[in-house]
Length: 161
Image (cartoon, rainbow, N blue to C red; front, side, top):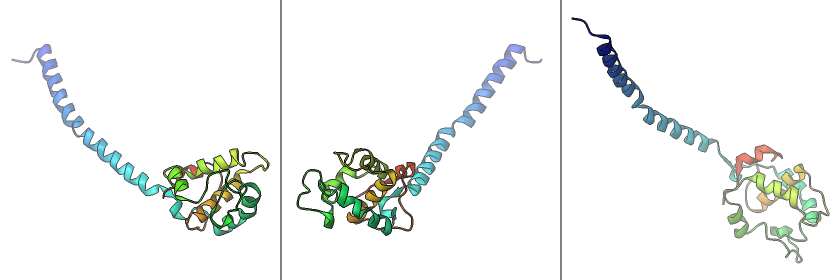
C-alpha cells in the first residue's frame, strides 16, 4: 500500500529537517573559523609606527617649520626652547600614553587643523605629515624607505608605545 499525500509530506518534512540540520550544524564552527582566520590576517596587515612609516629626509624637512610654528608652545627633545611651556610635550611618556593605540591620521589631522593654536601659520596636509614624522623620530621610532603621506593611508598606521 502506498503512502498518502499527507504521510509523504510529513516524511519529506522530517527528512528535510534532518538533512538541513546536518548541513547547518557545522555552520557556526565554520563561521568561527572564518572570523579567526580573518582576525589573524587583519592583525598581520596592521602597520604601526615601529614599521618605519616616514623617512629621515621628511623629518629633517620639518625642522624649520617646527621652529616657526610649534617650538614656542611645545617641547620636543632637542628641539625644545625654554619658553615652550604653553602646550604639552610631544616627546615624553605622557605623550606616548595619550596617543598609544590611536592612528597617525588623528595626530597629523590635529596638527593640520588645530596648530598652531593662534593660527599664525597655515599648515598643509603635507607639512602636517612632515611634522608627524619629526615627532615620531624624536620619540625614538625609526625611519623607513617611504614617506608618510597625507590622507586616509595614515588611518591604517597605529601609534604604539
